[in-house]
Image (cartoon, rainbow, N blue to C red; front, side):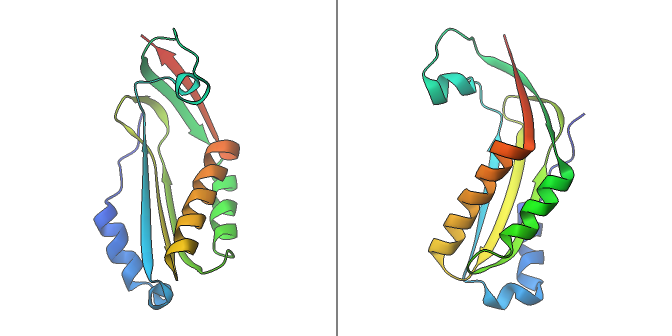
Length: 131
């Protein structure tokens, strides 16, 4: 069963109250969602798979925790928060939220891209089911 989604507004409020917030010149969020178009079609141009109906989603919790700790060592990064869903998810359901706070825009953008990439490449298991 999918988890209750967090409030990004609440996350930002809490991030700005964190003692490290004074170091941050930018907060950037990512909300990954289940899309109807199969991953192989989007990434590899493979047609004929049908439309995604649901995905089965899980993740390595300890690995995600370690990735968050690592992200806090990257240049200019002072705040990181991650939420991942789990279970059977439908089109439009949120897969993940990531919030990065860093000193300057390039560091924030780079950290968000790097962390989301690591999570998606190494720490999640997704299986698409088609109509």
